[in-house]
Image (tube, rainbow, N blue to C red; front, side, top):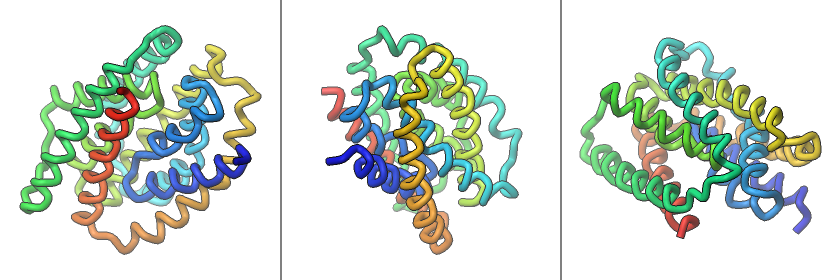
Length: 243
């Protein structure tokens, strides 16, 4: 199949998933991109491709953003992501990826059961937030897949779906700016990779438009259920691909 068709279809699906759940575009794109590019370049192209979708959603919900909730987790996350980015050229992280998959499956089952029983979790202890940010940053630097745990964190502390989407998309926008700059400066990404990104923008925009239409009809409980299920699917994907 022509790489242009692959990029548009993959980015459309990624944009839709990102627009509905607030994360997951990297997971979708990393199913397809390693067929076209090396892993570390795939992670960079994935992140940059979805920047247009992230900007669209962050702008749409900008009035619901609460900046103070972003600062500490982002600083912890980005320091770890920077560290693991430099390791990405040397570290074989298959076993670690499998452990991440198991963690996400367990968390998805826990929160899904809580959701079905109508038991809400409104706080996450600071030490858990630190662990979530460290793990997410580590895997973002390696594979460009740092979203699920941070999505779970922001979903728990947010008071509306608008606040959640504003928080998680602004978080990922800041992440994209820093990590993409580092990938270009270290030579992981080059100008030659931009053709994949530019074509992917088309699909990302289409998917985000479709997602925005759906989100407006969802209440927060249904949206939470979608997110927990997708975290579980993410965990299964990481576990299977690590074996």
